[in-house]
Structure formats: C-alpha cells, structure tokens
Amino acid sequence: MKALKIILIVAGIALIAVALYNSFMPEPIFKLGPIEVDKKEGLTGQNMWMLGIGVIALLAGAFIREK
Image (cartoon, rainbow, N blue to C red; front, side, top):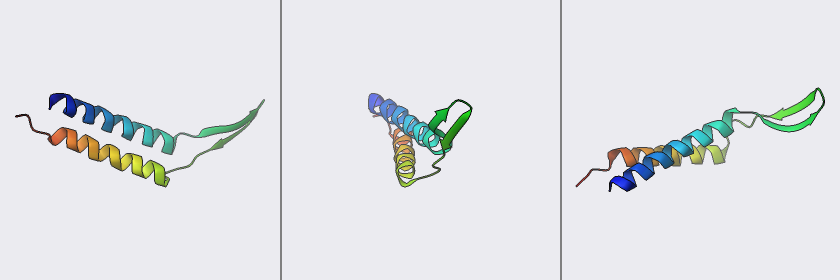
C-alpha cells in the first residue's frame, strides 16, 4: 500500500503541474527575427480534466491508510 500511496501522490503532483504549465505558459507558434507570435490557451477542457484527475489522485494518495 505504501508504494501505491507514493505513486498516486507523485502522479497527482505531476498532472497538476503539467495542467497548470499548459494553461499559463505561452506556446511559441512563429518566430522570425524580432517578430514572435505566441499563443496562450488558458484553461481548456483538456487542462481542466488533467487538473481534476491530478487532484483526485493526490487526495486518494493522501487518504490511503496503512494496514
């Protein structure tokens, strides 16, 4: 159970981090010399699902009890 707890906590933190990074960091689309075009998506459906699953995994890992 201890390994499952650690895996769930690490996976939850990783999913939350990736979702927040994808939501708030601009994605470079085009760069030509001094001209640069960036795209910032914000919270899309995919990012919200990833964030939700990360929170669920983190909470599940935190509340698993040892026998």
